[in-house]
Structure formats: structure tokens, C-alpha cells
Image (cartoon, rainbow, N blue to C red; front, side, top):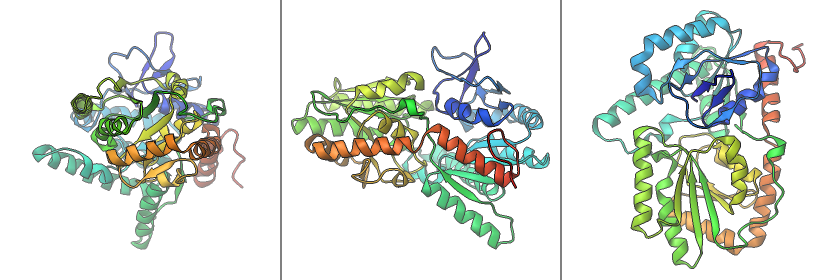
Length: 404
């Protein structure tokens, strides 16, 4: 996640979710040194890190692998210096820089723990690349899959959701069977929530228009292109609905996806009902959720558990999402959300119609969402992870009982 440092020395992240994660880990360490890409020109707004014991070891800005690899010699030198400054290395993967930092850490005998948040191999079939682009990205995915297997079978690993845990646990078991060391994989659920973020309203969808919200990075793997058709179907069925899409585009492919969504909304005569609002920093986004009636995320395979699902539940929004990846390890169908078998426009529209037509179901989902959100705060996640890190890596961390 790109960061920047303001003139007063404060550190900022454009989105905010990773910044909150860093803040949650800060009490357990004397200092956190972030080796992250830093904007050449900072954006107009973002989310400020609150912890005082965090500093930057900046990398040149790169939005993806295409920009990362031409600058690899410069990145490598800075990663080597960063690894030398630290006592323990934490890598959030997949990312192009991770394998190089991992190998440097092993060479310097530094303990490492990983957090796996996505699965490039699973999302590959859903990307609209053709020809040379498809071949190049396929080669990159193959390399990242190799790199992930190399790292997760040699280091303490946390995985976001059951599907990612099972994938990497299976690989680690296989590694042990082939005389490699293997490593333990622990499941976690990435979150941005503190208890004060959890709302208390008991119902939604009681006044017109019904306001639907989607928060997501805009790229083809998220399944967002079906949203205009879903809104058109709901309007045709007599429902007064609007939908706001909040989130940044990711590179050129994200810009193209945003334009396709807007074009489809105009084609279906719902252009005034579908609004693409762009990115909103997390500190501003959290209260924004409470202005809506339901949350819709027709995502595709390729990620662990989107943290926006917990954010929506904390705000009292009934959640509609797809039963892919690790989502079913967070969302229990008809208890704290509705799971769709596929991410089609028809499935989205049918799920929203149920929410509007069945108040008892809607209220049950909201109550179940609150219960789930309270069980997955940042404080709980950090305490659980650091207890494991202390025990498995034999480290003495602040606030964690010493390993016997």
C-alpha cells in the first residue's frame, strides 16, 4: 500500500486499511519500519497512522509488477538495507517485492512471518487479458505461485480465511512429505474495525430510495460489471434503488473497467442511479457506510476475505456477496449475510429483493453482522497473531507473556 510523509513528520496511507493494521501491531514492538512504496506526489487525502513508533524505509512508487521489475536493482538495495535494520520481518503477500525481501531475511537469519491475503492463480481466469498480455501475466502468476509456495513452506504463515489457509496448509504438508521443513499455517480474518466503529441501528430499507453500496477496488476480478444490470432489474421490478460504487481503480485495467461500468449503466438507462464515487480514505469511509441500506459485493475468486464485509456489518448493513474463496468462513448464509452461488446480475437482484421484502430476515442479518464484527476487531486480531508469533518464533513481545 503506498504511503507518504507529511511536512510535520506524520505518516499517511491513501486507503487506510493497511495503516490501521500497522497501528494494531505497533504496541507489540519497540519500532516498526515500513518498507513500502511512497508516492512521488501525495494524493489530496488519506488516512493518518496513529502509532508514534512507525517510520518509513521508502521504496520508489510502483502500482504493480510492470513498474516494479524495471527498478529491481534499486528496490533490492533498499530492501537489503531495510532487512538489516530489523529484528523480525513481516511480509504481506502476494506482492512483487516479497520474495526478494524473504530471501534477504533468510540470508541474514532474520525470523519471518507472512500474511497471505490473496490468490493470483484463482483470479487469473477472470481477467480480460488476451494475447501477449495474457501470456505475460500468466508467467508472472506462475512465478508468484512458486514464490508463495517457497515462502509459506519455510516461514510462519497467517492466511486470510479458510480457503487460503487450506491451500497453503496443503502445500506445507506436501513439503514435509518431500523432506522439506514445511511450516504451520494459521487462519486469521483481516479487519479494520475497533469496537467504536460498530453501530447500533436495527433495520434498514424502510424508506425510498433503497441505497445500495459497494466498496471495492475497481478491476475485473471483483465482478462489478454486473451491478448496472442488477440495478436495472430491480427498477424494472418496481424498486426505487440507487447504487454507489466506492473505491480506486487499479492501473489501466481498472480505468477500463470503471468506464465499462459507467457505459453499461448509461446503456441500461440507470446512469443516474449508479454513481462511481472513486476512492474514499478509510477514516471518512467508516461513517459513510451508515448512510446506506444494504451492501453488495459480487466478487470473483482470487482473494481471502474482503475486509469491507466486516466494515459493512459493523455499520448495520445487511450483506450480499458471492460464495467464493474464504468468504463462507466469515459469512453464514441467512445468519449474518446472504451468499450468492454466482456473481450474476440476476443473483444480485434476487438477493436484494429478498432483503427488501423480508424484514425479519434483514433484521436477523444485521444483528448477526454486529455479532460477527464484535468478534473480529483489530485488537483481537493483533493479540491473537502476536501470541502466535511470540510462541512460534520464540520472541519476547510487549504485552505478550514470555514463551515458556
